[in-house]
Length: 227
Image 1 (cartoon, one colour):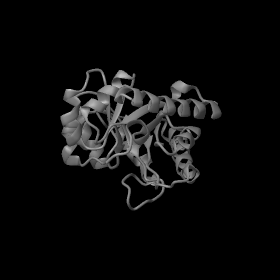
Image 2 (image 1 turned 90 degrees about the vertical axis):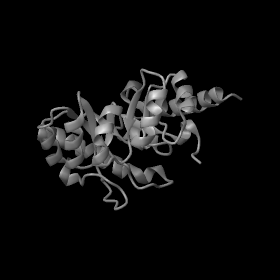
Image 3 (image 1 turned 30 degrees about the horizontal axis):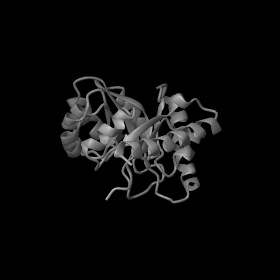
Image 4 (image 1 turned 180 degrees about the vertical axis):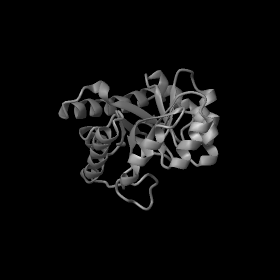
């Protein structure tokens, strides 16, 4: 079996899962976008995914993306989903179409300073209070949104979270629901539209979609296990 055929088969399984989850949640399929997490994978893997119709790719590290993006096909959208240090904000603002992992005011201001055009961002929220994860505390997000009103280039399009891993997807539901409820409340309080919720990965995408995700970040189930 060729690598392209193998990828097509894995993609078909993921797409079916997304479609079924949308149907179960009574949501339209186009309300959920698939972000192919290509971190640690070579440009050749990205090209196969692009040939199969994928356009959105997620990377964890600026340095890896810096080497990968220029040698991949044009017309792809690159999203940063990993932790970003402020000293790499200038390069990130040039490389990525969206940054899902803005976890501090310092970082948001650095990105705003270096971006040369509108840069969509998501605020990463540590809804579980997990000491191993980055992100704003839920009670800090309103102030971050108000600060974003002063940005010249950064536009907050929504929120992102990475819950503690559990092999049981149902155990992540409360975290996804908490993010959606926080978003809904902030939209009312701040008067700012926040249409995007980046949450859900290979093992829990169904639960994430049921709870309102608009971006599911899928790596393993598309590209296979990472070595």
